[in-house]
Length: 207
Length: 207
DNA sequence: CTCTGTGAAGAAGTTCACAGCA
DNA sequence: TGCTGTGAACTTCTTCACAGAG
Image 1 (cartoon, rainbow over the protein chains, first blue to last red):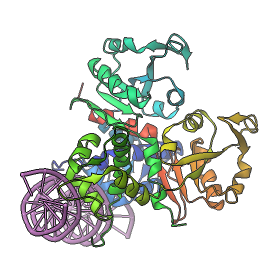
Image 2 (image 1 turned 30 degrees about the vertical axis):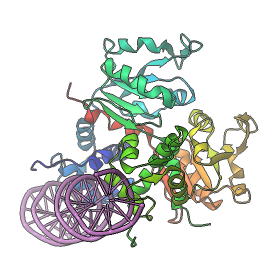
Image 3 (image 1 turned 180 degrees about the horizontal axis):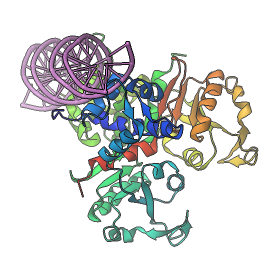
Image 4 (image 1 turned 30 degrees about the horizontal axis):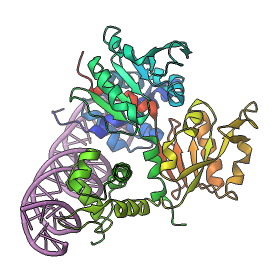
């Protein structure tokens, strides 16, 4: 394999492959072809092979891919090999749902701290974790927490981000419907739920 | 303007523009240039003008766009002109968060029914709405509910979708981490929260 | 002169087609 | 034969550059 710029879209698909592989593994499959994996995740085999080819040659011609090996490779590419601690900021309804969300653990994430600025909530237990004052965000660095999830109201999001960046956070999953300004070294992924919903009617048949 | 295929990516950006325009409007702006709007939403002016050009010419050369007019145009393109009723399936933590989510109303959505298959929940009030048995999903057609939000566990998602499709639902926002099989006339947008999080470490500096 | 609208150039991403290994 | 890995063709999307309206 020669070097080529890796499409962001390929990275976006890797967790899909990973999920498919985990399922295959549970069902006892030891190896899988690009074609079979494609069926499972509803993408096409060419694309799967192309995506993998950016990172090296993981398969065996005439046979396919070893499920366990491929799983390990993808986890390594995505840097999911270690458990990563994340802070949750915003202990409202969305925060509560995220705290109980089972999907995070599957990729090695652990919500290790919860913050809110509502005095009524601070000190309360929340899914087994004590809610801390947002003034304590600066302790994140010493606590080795490098990721954060923002589930605050939109108005509070930019201020929260600034504090998180000061505290050395390097990756943020943002649910506030706002563009967040951050230094280049910090990666932000925004999920704007209402906005996704907003483009649904466009695709509906004229009624 | 001549006909050209409209990029899905342009459609994806329209709600972003809409949000920016609503904010500008609140601040009393009556007109805006592509450059100013671009600053606000952190995209580039060329792209904004190009996106609009797919749908016609909305601006005035030398001046810019009238905020109110452009807002109306975008709402029309996205078919957000009417209030649309949506059913929420799954009254767990995520469902609860979605029910209270303020962003939906901004685009004209109203959650008009909530379903769950847990007998303990059925009949209870949930954000002012009585939770119904999922067996009643078939009533959606007569109730003029054409959209649905799936917030069930992954295993229940495909069965739920099948029932929704039977009930005449034509657009679905899916939070279950699964590819959903639907007829072509039905549009599904999936938001897989854990998967978005999973690609975050890839972008982190090697530590 | 300012700012829109758009063809054309360029970049990014996907699909094809086939060489080559098992 | 079966399936991978990958250059090349193709398609889609973005950015540029500028004609032309106000």
